[in-house]
Image (cartoon, rainbow, N blue to C red; front, side):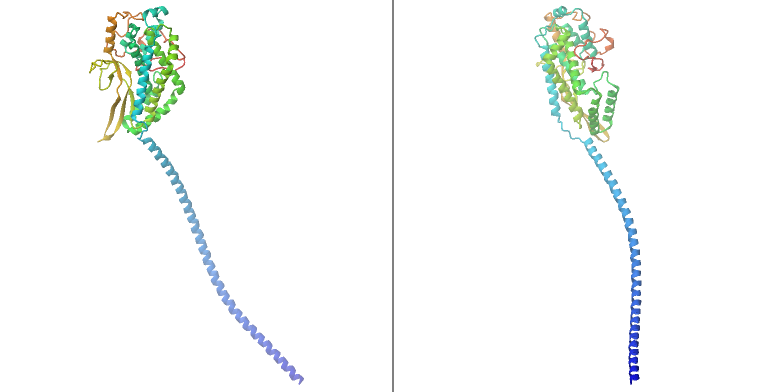
Length: 455
């Protein structure tokens, strides 16, 4: 019995082990199946990973290419912006350069010229009519021994060419104690000639410097080939920077005042002022220095306005040339008898400045044209006025036959009073007499050109 039980027990255990083995084999099969399945999935995932890696590489390559393209585009945009900024600046500059709109109307310049003419007239009349001037040949010979002072004054005025020869002769021949009109005309003439030169010169040098002559030639060439906007802007910019060629403006004012005062003293000496030259100079500065400075300031303002601020046209101060025939369309006779409706004769001198407008018109049919109009006619004194004064003076027996210089009067061989300006032909004295802190040298053959140097 006992043996049978043992066998049963052993058989049971064997069956249990077989069952476990079978279960394990089934588990192994199942796990094999799962392993194969996992291997399949793994292979799929590996294939997908390879695909993703390839896609990533392609994407990275594309990104690199796009980044390079982006960098190139950014560089191109930067260059384009730089060029745009440069072209924009050029355009703004071009608009500024070619701008035709001026903020200066003709009326403003006309007012300045009218104020200068008025100041010239009042100052000349004030000096001529000053009661402290003892005018007469007796006073001259009493105070001055010899004629050196008068010779210097005559030489200075004659060589400068500011006064017509017969007007210069009349100043030293007439006795002005009863009538000072001729003195006033001479002073107005000198001021008008002087300020006309001031408003047109480039650098205030005497004789005109090479740079000044070249700039004048260039300006004329530009006017003949370029439109008004270009010519006007070039003139304005060049004039503005050409001021660097001469002394500072504050010194320039003083120098010009001194030079003009020296001319005034020369006229007064020829007319028989009894005081010494230095005293006369000091008296003019004391009594009329502010008036002279006002005239200089106005002339400088006219020049700055006409040559630096105006682009769309050229405004030019004008005067009539001594010796030319009187033309009522271009000038006015300041001393004309109201009863004479149509004055005739030749110009002795200009006593007030005029103003003209010059403008280059757009080409029409390929032909350039220039329009010139008169805004203000210069005022003149005719030779007939001097003839009338001479007749009146002769009737009153107030003409000194030989004149104050003690030499034959200049201008008798030039009855029309045309300029014969030749400084080298006058042998009177060596250097002009220096009065005041600056010396006024008048050496030009075209007008009142002066050397602005300290003596």
